[in-house]
Image 1: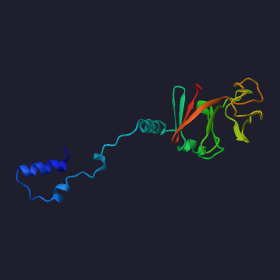
Image 2 (image 1 turned 90 degrees about the vertical axis):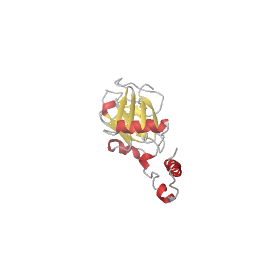
Image 3 (image 1 turned 180 degrees about the vertical axis):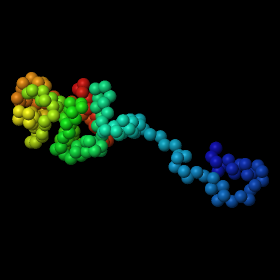
Image 4 (image 1 turned 90 degrees about the horizontal axis):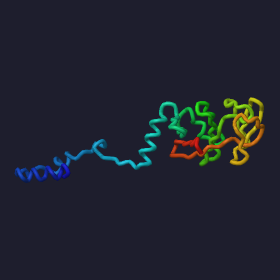
Length: 170
């Protein structure tokens, strides 16, 4: 039973029928904290990920990496053609287009270095020896295999609003 209805019933039992409706109406709660908000399962998951990535913009759960592209550490990913080299997780994250993000192993196939990458014309360049590597899914070359050409290993990447999800098992 709602508060206003309850007060009307109590008032009539005790003969208090002269109270104005504005007085009773003032018993209604306008406090937004009194309202019950039900979140969808997707909203609950998203909010949980935002909390887990709040500190440094990323959260690793087993072999799944979550990155918040609104965090300062990853904000360059808001620009098409930009990339981030996450040394901690050995991954390059590229914003290929407005809707497409791609993730690659940051281990150079030539000699296994991981910290000297640049990107242009659809290719990553390891400045350790100047070798360039593509981003397609064929002719994948393995880390440290002495290969001087080919394509970097790619990981499945999806998005939940502004959280990128990189699956290292893909």
